[in-house]
Length: 69
Image 1 (cartoon, rainbow, N blue to C red):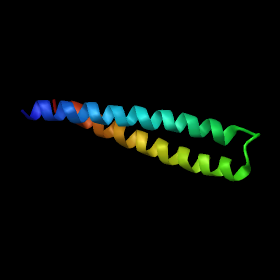
Image 2 (image 1 turned 45 degrees about the vertical axis):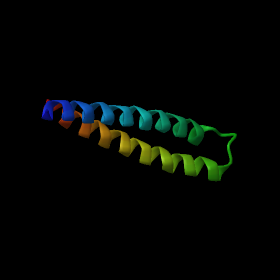
Image 3 (image 1 turned 90 degrees about the vertical axis):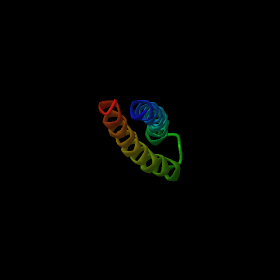
């Protein structure tokens, strides 16, 4: 039963990791866009940093759940 629970958690963490990875890439692109207003670029850069941290966090949690299976 715990194996199924851990597998479910691992899948959930992977989905969140992928979602934050996509958001990170989108925000990174906006931050690099020289045609965007500076406020938008700074906000996107801040959001990209947060997304990258969340991506790493969910990746680590997912790996720990997979090890428990």
